[in-house]
Image 1: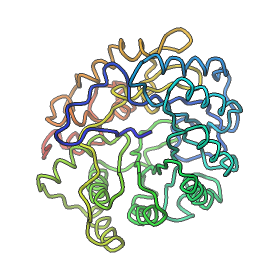
Image 2: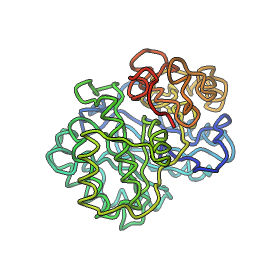
Image 3: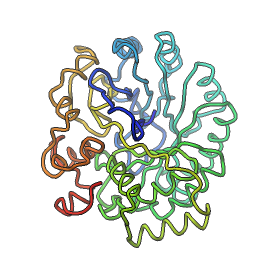
Image 4: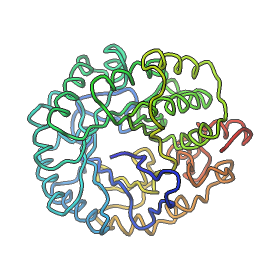
Length: 381
């Protein structure tokens, strides 16, 4: 379900021109939570125009139409457990030979029985969100008391059932200083995949939650350190993490107050690094390995990039993905400004969603990248 499945050093370049790696389907915007950073501004009840069961089956047929290797289909939301037909849809995807993943909200609907049913239907993995090392931080971000406790219980149940499990964390000003303690908590309960989301200011996400490019650079260096403890670490909307990984491998230094604080606490909690870094050196971008189907059937390059490509009711996913001029330019890295001239553009490419959110241009430079802020000066390994 990761945005960052990728090739390691020495592997051939990734080519997602024929089909994406992942198709995300926002099955509904209904959700029992009201998270401060929610990209969808999710609400308690479904919105008008939500795809019917028959139209959902059409989405699944269109994913299968990409042909082998068929993309992984991720049922997301809102909360997909709010759809009464979720199990029918997951079962149909399995019949069509599609690998599936589910991203449920952690509410009273995420019962042990629901987790067991996902396992029995062959769901390959689930992702749960944990945004703080403390109850106060996580529940404050999710805006519902008891969510932290319920999440840890769901983690334990998912691991007991043998489900593939990924923990997602949205890094923001409210929780950035807790990242070492959160990482330590995840390792202690047996989580082995951690995906860290960097904010894009869409939906409820505001400038007050966001970090500066310098702070994001420090978080990337911390994630490089964390990836040396046997946990697969990935990022979403932070492809410049791949540039940082290359920098660190060449011995390029980085020193900043936030990074020193995160690094020192990580070392105090975990001791010295034990394994090679698990960070990938290449990966996906919105529109380059990623495709998103919204609740109403409209198709976008990614969930955080609301650039409408078409609609599943009148188009097919393979045609929209393969023939879109915008997506072709993203895949060819025909970017503008500093991102277009950066020697790391093939491996990185910047967040297309953040560029669009700031400039309304999906090919513009990523304003969260430190090199962009510095006008292109600095190291880009």
